[in-house]
Structures are given as C-alpha cells and as structure tokens.
Image (tube, rainbow, N blue to C red; front, side, top):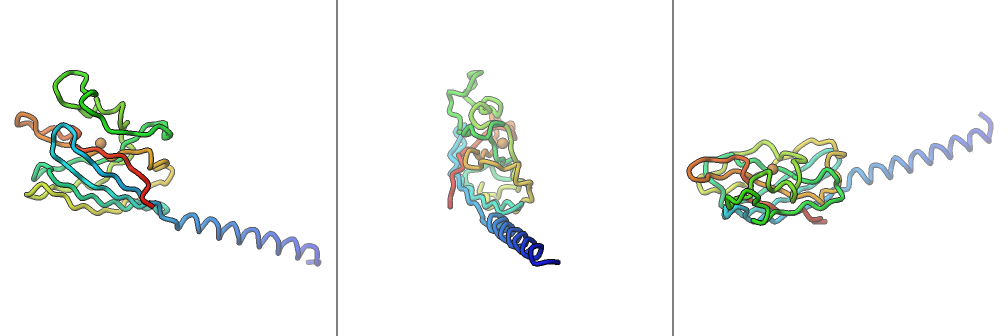
Length: 177
Ligand SMILES: [Cu+2]
C-alpha cells in the first residue's frame, strides 16, 4: 500500500468510526413520554401512563384507579394513520347515535385506530386499581411521533353487560424528557 492509499483508507476508517459513534449515540438516547388519562363515559377512571422508548424496547408503566375489579381492560396506543395529526380524546359530542356513550368507533375520529396494544392486559385487582409494568419489543418505525399519539383504556359494564371495547379513559402523550 502506497502512502496515498494509506491516507485514503485512514480517512475512510475515521469517517466510518465517527458515523458509527454517532449512530450509537442516537440509538442509546431514550425518549420519554407521559399521559394523564381522564375518564370517558363517566367511568371514574383516572390513570397515569409513562413510556420510555430506547432502540427497539418500549417500557410501559401504567397506574390506574376506578377500573372495574376482576376485569381485563384493553389498553392501547392510538393514533392517526397520518402521524402528523395529533390524536386527542373525545367528548360526548362524539356520541353520534345518542345513547349517551362514546363507543370505540365513535371515538375514532379523535384518537384514531390502534397503533400498538400495550399487552399483556392484566386483571385489575379487587379495588379496581392497576399497577402495570411491561417491556415490549417493537419495530421503532411503528412508533413514530409518539407525541402525537394518545393512550386509551377500555372496558366497562353498561346495564349489567361488560363491553370490553368501551373507552373508559383517554389521555394525550406528551414528551416527558
Ligand atoms: Cu384502544
């Protein structure tokens, strides 16, 4: 290898090394988000959700109260297909059929479809509290623009019938860095 080639390969090596260092810096930086959920459909449910996204791991913490004891309450990240549109939470104005409930479909114009289920869904304790921790492996491209997403919890009895899909709490995710 002559001096010119040696110089070129050293320069390329330096470039490679610096771009690798840059990539790993980016990868290791955790993004944190938080949502304060308020009740939907007069459920009385309040919840706080914290998310930490690093690389392909999403850590989820949920603390909720006022849930129906002994039930599984589906919980999801919701958002619009166009991730630049900010998902929000419906009010009773979203009740199209006039039954005084916002059904899961009536809320879709506000919070959009499910982006990611926060599974496993755990049983709620006898007092209606949920203290939830999980770590989900995800494809990071699935979770763009988390600051434009919302968390929705579901499941409540109406006139003695449990409706697992009925929205009971909702909150917008905000950056919590
Ligand atoms: Cu949902």
